[in-house]
Image 1 (tube, rainbow, N blue to C red):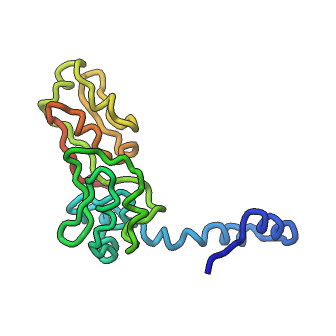
Image 2: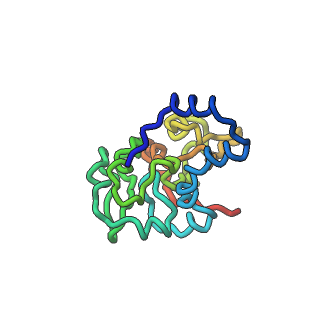
Image 3: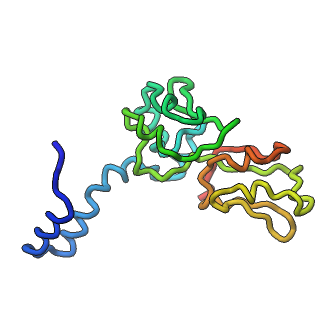
Amino acid sequence: MSDSRDASYYRAWMSSRTVSRRGLFRGLLSPGKPVIEQVPQSSADVLTRSVARPPQAIAEPVFLQQCDGCGHCAQACPVGIVSVQDGKASLAIDYAECDFCGACTQACKSGALDECIPMDIGLRPVILSQCLGRLDDMCRMCEIACPRTAIFFNQQNQPAVDDKRCNGCGKCKLVCYHGDIILSLKHHDS
């Protein structure tokens, strides 16, 4: 049963009623409770991932229960980087980056992918020691290509990745024509 109430309904209802501050916040925040229960509650949830999952994957323990391996997400992926391995959806960035189009999330019927979860694959670039950008400033392809400006080089030509900006799209790995970037699952120390 769908709720046909829109903004004008609530505006009219609010004009004829008085609502306490507590009631207002309870009404605004209660729809978010189901989403909060699905978001990883600690970094331990993320650490249990052994493979990259499609963007907007729910917390790994719940994902493993929800994902039924139907393959709808893999069929919907326009660049073909989502596949089903060991009966669960996984993601491999080898020849194309994730553009976060949301097609996999829209195709998911099991609830393992949720549009309320931020778009993040959970992969982070690791720039190897033989990176030419470390030697001089002639190569900065990864820094230039990063759509979120998450990779930067300091004055000593040492690369750094801002984990808060990076969403694991994989574009940096693909533009590095020397192969000096690998993607690994992010791990939190805190």
